[in-house]
Image (cartoon, rainbow, N blue to C red; front, side, top):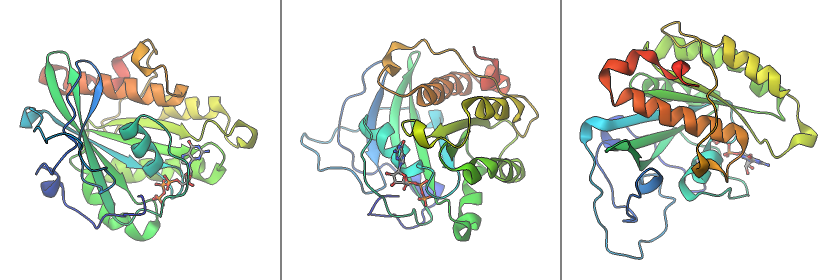
Length: 246
Ligand SMILES: Nc1nc2c(ncn2[C@@H]2O[C@H](COP(=O)(O)OP(=O)(O)OP(=O)(O)O)[C@@H](O)[C@H]2O)c(=O)[nH]1
């Protein structure tokens, strides 16, 4: 994570909201709820506790090799822009929350940033178990990070719940000159990858204009995530997974 690498935390800690920046939740878009990672700025307005149904907490865990850009992705997701510069390697795990509007419900989206380094693996495994979605990142300029996706999937299958939504994201799409993994290789792997429950994944169409400022692969992630949220807030559809969209 960032310079202020957080000490290992428990999911129970995460259920306790911590002071936020107090921003309102615009309908149909992503909005800040709070930042448990310690990377937030001081609130400029009085803190207003966002309303959300505790049952509608959706946990996403970012996983992948060290340096693929998990922390950067989380910061970008939070702040709406890429913040260049190096972050210290994540120590253990940290998280941030956003409230997203899904249909008429507000869902607390809790995104966990795990350490890619091998020595923290036993810590991060514990967080797979109650994850609704796992975002698996590789670096398109780093071939080994792509080749290690299979090993990550094996771990996911071992530790995650059966109906978890898995999303594959090729990061650093701006560095095309140094690309070491072809886009269609990533696509083929995504098609072959299966959730622990054995359902194959498919890509969704990108049609949401709110996502215009993001790169294509990030759009796919966000759209999948939105679909995943839709599915998870309607229990009878939960077993359809993200692979049914598009
Ligand atoms: N050009 C470019 N650089 C990126 C991108 N995402 C991340 N980086 C850079 O890649 C380096 C590693 O990023 P991190 O976000 O710290 O990687 P991480 O996956 O969190 O690493 P660990 O915490 O060790 O697991 C940093 O120098 C980032 O600035 C991207 O999309 N484009």
